[in-house]
Image (cartoon, one colour):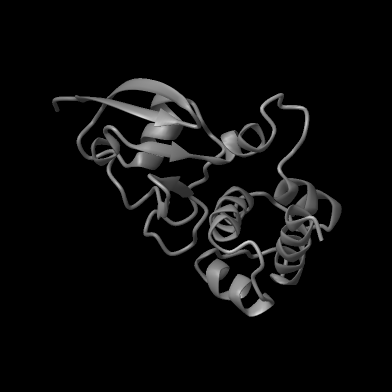
Length: 163
């Protein structure tokens, strides 16, 4: 099968890749670019583990072909702390809140939840608990029971607002 050349910007860095036409963006990130933070949970867009931000829009990377990402700007979990603190010395407040308030357990859903929460807080820095629950409804977690995830997002939002 003929591979296609694509160029994409991931977490601020430009990449060139040769991708199979049937490979997903998830495959491209993990296999071609060795960015393995984004996880595959279901491969059907139902769990949110593979959530990334493509040109400012939250996407399930398992539902997008790698060739469709040609020319796109993509944010993954690997770039979250760096986007917040250019020196790389600090975690993003969401990551720190998840650590401090037990918002993660096995780690399969965590990257997708963090990326989704970041997308929410960029649009709405002061969400209600209901809004956070609604926004993260596409992210399935089998370990935490969701309350710790929601609490972590609410705490990070408050910190990011300086409240």
